[in-house]
Length: 336
Image 1 (tube, helix red, strand yellow):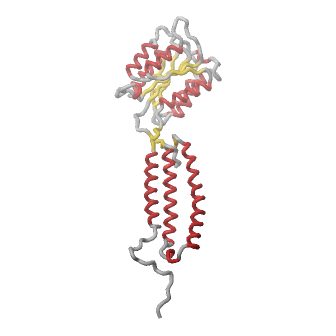
Image 2 (cartoon, rainbow, N blue to C red):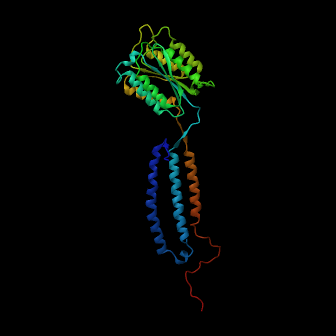
Image 3 (tube, helix red, strand yellow):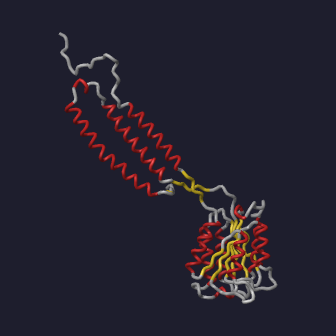
């Protein structure tokens, strides 16, 4: 299985090219030095020099030292290894606007189809442990799917909704309140989160307008419920409809919902914008892999290899002579 290793300071990795370069320079130099020693050294000194075992020790020691240098460079590059987090399972409710205005074609092929395509990509990128629910809203709200980790069922539900007729009206506040009820019924808010930042539950509202149903729950009241439940709300505004002249604009309403609850507000004017926004928000609200710093292990490995290289090179040192010992001649006549 390949290791998906990343580096925070990858420019240091260029220094690894110096390792084979040093080896290419050092080996011919060592060969010339050895030949010179054999040619010009006193034979009485050569007789106590390193045996073949010492030569092998020098080579092995040099290899270990170069490997230590390579690991030290890797440590400087700050390697990080992705590991699965042990966080609590996350739950996301998608609140999707299915009102008539979602049929406008300023997004290709229209707002509704672009929204469902982005939602499907969101589901495809979600970890298997993420529970996803679906709420649709227009003049009223409907829980189409309770939060589930069966992502195939989520995709099937999205396809089913995409083929249904749209309705009149936009009950944004009621959609948020219904999404919160769905989260609570699924157990995602038990125990209650300590803060919105630590909440395992999220609501993602996708709409092209603000509240247009006067009898429905106002968005401000629904936002208060989200704040009390410590559930962040992420809102995406499709298009740039101004809304009703006697009410706050859709941008103002959705921005306030996200800001007060600890979520994120974004606006999409094109299909490409919508896909990018969905991907960005997905990277925030979906649990992902945590990057663990492994530079310390590379540095420790470098130190171990350096110490091992020192020990191995110690075997290449010539044996010590006791004080007063005379060197043995390389050859002498045998007594007859």
